[in-house]
Length: 427
Image 1 (cartoon, rainbow, N blue to C red):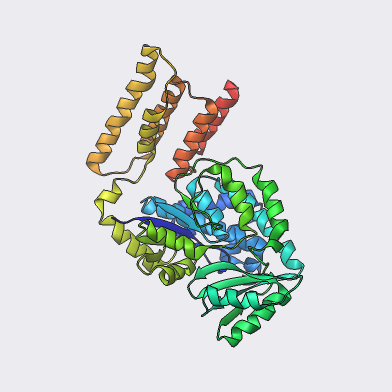
Image 2: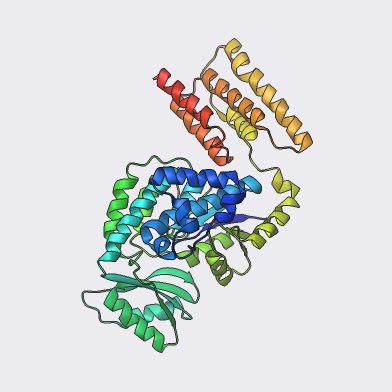
C-alpha cells in the first residue's frame, strides 16, 4: 500500500508565473492568495505572476511567495485527491510550510513569521559579512575534510545543508567561503555561489534567530494533524512544545535533508510528493532514495500521474476526510459532562443519528457531501458540543481544524463568525 510524504521546498525554486495555473483553475488557490494578500498587506499574487525575477528573488519577497505557493499546492491536492500523508518535511523555509499544512501553525501566522524572517535575513545579507555556495560532485566527507584543513582564526565556514551524497551547501564568513571554494574547485567540485545570499543555517544568523524567538513566542500552536520532520535533527516534532526551539535553532544549524529522506524511506514511504513551484526536492529524493517515487504536484504531468494512481485505489479513497466524517468522529470522541438524559437524547443522540444516516447514504452513492449537507453536519456538532458542555474556545478550535483540514475554511467563514460571536456572548 502506498505511503506518502509531502515535501515543501525552500528558496531557489521561485520563478515568475509560479502557481498561476492553480490560481486560474481552482477557487481554493485564489482564496489562499487573497488571504495571503490581506495578511501581508501587499499583492503577493501579482508579485508571483507578474513581478520581475529581481523583485521575486529578494529574500523578503521570496520567502512569503514560496510559502503561499506551497500551501496553494497542498490545498489543491487535498481538494482534488485528498489522500492524507504519513509525514511532512520541508527544506529550510519549507519547514514553515510543512508546519502550516500540518495544522500546527495557521497559514496567517506562518505568513507573518516568514515575512519577519525574510526582513531579518535581508538585514544580515546587507552586511556582506557572510555568503553561501552550493557544492556539487563532492561528498560531504570530502568537503568537511577540506574545511578541517583551513586555518581561519576568527572566521569560519561550514556545511549548512546536507542535501545528497554528492551535494552540500557551505556558508560562513565570505572570505572563508571563497577560500574553501578555491580548494574544492581544485578537487573538481562544481561551485555555484548564491549571489547576495545570507549565510543561512549558521551562527551568523543569530539576529534572525533572535527575531524569530520574539515572533514565535506570540503565536498559538495547534495539534499536529500529520507528523513534521525537523531540519535540525531529521526527526519528527514530538509535540508543539518544541516548535519555538527547533525553528530558532534551524536558523543556526545545518539542514539535515539527506537524513530526512533516509528517515522517510526507513519508515516505509513509497511516494514523495513535492508541494512547491519546481521539482527541486523531487530530484534530491531520487538522488538520495531512488526506491521512493518522487513527483511534483505543480508539474502538470506529475499531477496527472498522481490522479491516475489514486483514482484506481478504492481503499485509499475511503480514507479521504470530509466535513461530515470529521464531525461524526469528533462528536463521538468528545467527552461528556452533562448527565441529563433527556438533554443528551435531544442534543446528542438524535442529531448524531441523523447525520450518520446522511453519511450512510453518501457511502452508498459514492458522492461527496453538498454544502447544505456539510452545514447540517456542522450544526449537529455544535449541538453536541453545547450539550456536552464543551468550552467555547475548544469548540472554535475544533471547527477551525475541521474546515482547515477539509479545505472548506473559505466556504464557511460565516459559520466560523457565528461561533466567534457566540463565544463573545458567552464570555
